[in-house]
Length: 621
Image (cartoon, rainbow, N blue to C red; front, side):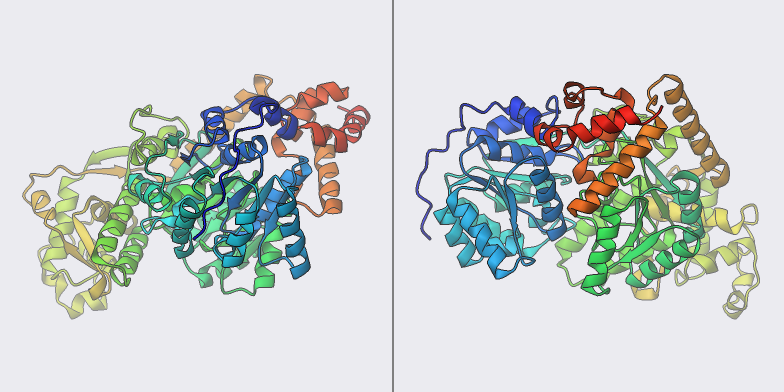
C-alpha cells in the first residue's frame, strides 16, 4: 500500500479551542479531561478515550477536526448516529456530511467532490465503506485532519458489540501513519481496552479514562414477578409521558410487551431485526423526533442513538455482561437530568443466559470469559451494598464512596439475615432429589406441596419434604436465586435447567461457609424509593432551582417542535432540553443575554435569536 504523502499538520494558530467551543457549540468551558484530549489530538497525537455516554466524547474529535487543517474522518457503525450528529453539526454552522449507503450516486459524488475540494470539516463514514479500495483511494487524495474511531469496543472479540469489520481498521495506521487517530468508547474493561489498543496500533498512545459515573442515573433492580405488570406500574408512576427504552431478549417478547404497553395507553413501539426495514426506520424516527415515545427493543436498537432526553431504560431480561448493561442504561439521561435504569431480574434469567453461553459455538476461552462476565452482572443484581459502587468498581474505580445515595440499595437499604440454615435446607433438597430437578419442583418439596410430580418420584417420602414451610414460594425463589448467584448451585443446560450442587456447596452444608441473604418486601421498598425521590424533588423546588416559567417552558417546546418539523431534524438538534430549561429560567431580554446560555452558539443565535427573544417577551409568567 502507498502511504499518504506527509503534510504540514500543525494546528491552525488562529484557532483557540475554548473560543471555538463557545462560538460553535455555545458551551462556556470544557468538562473533565476534554481540554487535554482536544489539545493532544490537535497537536497530532494518537489516543484512546473512555468516557461515559453523555460525557462529551464527540467534542474530543469534533473540536480537533475544526482546529486542524483538513477534514476529520469519523468512523461510525450506525447510519442513525451519523445522520443525527451531522444534522446537529450543520445546525451549529459546521461543514459536515455522511458517506454511506443511504446516498444516491449523485449525492455520494457531491460529498466526495467537497472532500477533495477541502470544503468539509467532518465526514462520517461506516467502517465497511471506509475499507473499500475506492474510499481508501479517495482519502489518500484528500487532506485529512484526523481519524476518529467511535464505538471502538466493536473491535474487541471480548466486547459486547463485536463487529468483524472493525478489525480491518488497523489499515489506518499502516496507510496513514502521519494522521492522528483517536479511538473512543463509553465502556470497556481492562481486557477490552488492551485489545482496542493492539488492534488499532495505539499501544504507545495515552489512554484518557474518565470516570464511568453517571450520577444522574438511579439504578434499581427488582425481583421479577410479573415483569410486564411491574414495568407498566413503573412507567405509570415514575415516568408517565416521558421517553424511554425497554430491552427484551427475544423478538416475540418485544412485540408482546409493546402491544401490552400500547393497550395500557403508553405510546410504545417495537424495534427488532425481524421487522421490515421501513418499519424500523419509521419507529426510530418517531422515537427521536416525538416526545414521550417508548421503544421496546432487542439489543439491535440503541448504539449511537443520540437522543438526550431518554428518561428511563428498563430491562425485562438480564443482559450478557456489566459492559452491556452499562452501555444500554447509559442511553438514559444524556442531558444530565435525573433518569432511571430499572431492571426486573429472576432466576430464569441466570439459567437462560448460562444456557446460551453453554450452547454457543465459541471457544472454551470465550465461554470462560462470558461466564465470568455474567457472574459479575449477577453479583451486581444481588448485592446488598451500593450498586453504583459495585458497578464502578468493575471498571477499576475502587476509590468511590461506599454509598452513592441514588440507587435502590442506598435509598432503601435491604435487610440482611443469616441464611445458613435456609441454604442448607435447599441444598439438601437438591441433593436428595438427585440433582435432576428445577426450581419449582424443589420448592414444592420444601414447602410440602403434594403435586403429581412429587408423588411420581416418591419425594414426599424424603426427609426434606416439608422442612421449608416457614417460607412461601416467592421467598424460596429469592433464596434459590441468591444461592445460584453465590455459586453454590448451578443450572445444568444439558438437563433442562436442573439445579446441581457446586464444590462450593460443601462448605455451606458442613456449616463452614457463612451465607447472608437479603430480604425486603418489594412493595414497601418501592414506596420508600418513590417517597424519597419525591422529597428530593420538593426540596429542589423549595431551593429555587426550578423557578422556570411553566408557560414559557411549554411555549419554547412547542416552538422547537415546529422548527424541527419544518427543518426535518430531531427536536434536540434545534435546542437541547437543558438549553430550553436555561432560557425558561433566565428569561433573557437581549441577544447578548441569550448568547450566554449554554447551547446557544453563534449560528443558533443568528438563526433563532430574534424569535426566541420575541417568544420570551410575549409569553406570560
